Picture 1 (cartoon, rainbow, N blue to C red):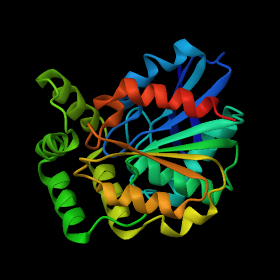
Picture 2: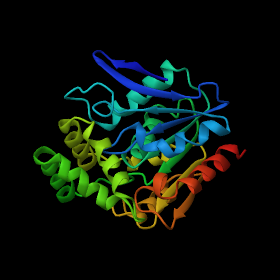
Picture 3: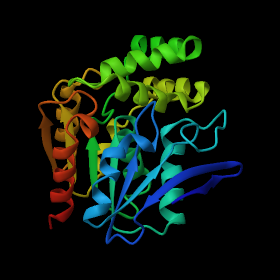
Picture 4: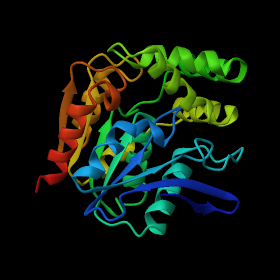
Length: 262
């Protein structure tokens, strides 16, 4: 079931709510430059074992509205809060991948973990900023040849071989976003970081990171783990930046186990 949640005047956030009758709710936050559909291989399985899966599209991405402004961690965390409040979510397992992981971290700090009982970070873009030279190149490429930039990102994303149709579908997820929002989020990653937020996380946290990640280095996952109390760190030895596809069976089982732990 898909619908919109008003985040602020003239900005609506698209939400996909799968199995609303599920006993426990997982709220998924996608990464750059994708949308909620990146979690297809979680949506295929987790509702079948009793979970409610809620996916949202950031402003400027997927089916959400595309304002020209508002692309910073505080505003994106507030958009998540709008979804949590509109759906009256409680005891949620918050899952964030890459930039979505950083947004989840900011949400936990800015909103004191409102409604969240556990946190899962997958290849999170934390705790540091993206180096300026790398970010600026992505911004230039986004504003001049975004289809090629997305193809290049896809080539960096995976450690395991993915079929041509799979990589084509993956690149297409990024094309659904606005070009200006694609560039704006990369500027955010360059100019902001969530390092100071990590000490404010007080819920059980599972950190998953691909050992072959070329987008957010594995060492960043280790650093994030060292800065979040009550966190556990699980390396994914056969993944790059896309464990939710590359090792989706293992990831799904790990989520089920983590959610069930007392």
